[in-house]
Length: 280
Image 1 (cartoon, helix red, strand yellow):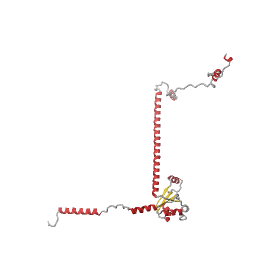
Image 2 (cartoon, helix red, strand yellow):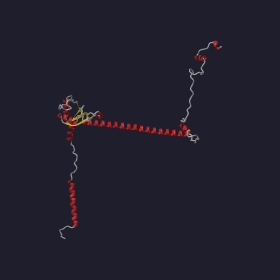
Image 3 (cartoon, helix red, strand yellow):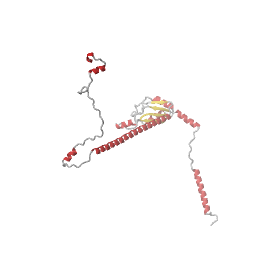
Image 4 (cartoon, helix red, strand yellow):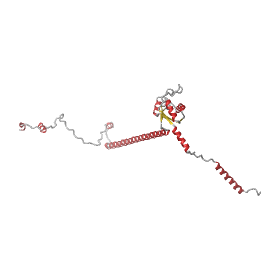
């Protein structure tokens, strides 16, 4: 074997060292996770200014079948828009409309639009409030009027808080209604069970009283023609319990032979004295 040729053990050590070097190199080449950008005081102040510069416009009436995209398209020429929220109508109204065969699309009742600049929001309200929505003459919203109002000192956070509050109230009301319905159901089932138990108890009493009242059957020596006649006779009612009754009193006017008070006793009770010849 040549002197410059490495042995098997030396080759294994060299291979292990080489593989370890590649692993460490691969570890160093992996990109580290991106850290969130830290906002300095200047950036925070800039964001606060942008937040304070925004203005909210309230729309008290949304025309039927108008979608948020169409509303944004109509308001964008008057300023840069941010967020937009439209409140859906009551589901019961939509259900009634479906039952009558009318349009089954979604309708909105009111909405809020956020302008990036509050001055643009004020200008848009002054220009559009009470005016026709316009657009193309064949549009379904051409003759509808804008119903806008600028909300001073009102931010989008206030709207989300109100929406969450109303949602929590609705969920709580729903939970109360569900619990009331469960109580009514449990009460109804309890009454049904009690009625069944009472009916079964009365049936057992009836069977027990009937078994005690009927005497044991005796073999009759009569003719076969007489036996059906005895079976056809109605059974006598079984007296389970007797209650004591008071005898009715006789009427002194209608009934004869009723004892009555004498006239002298009545006068004495009334306080009148009888004459002397009457006393003798």
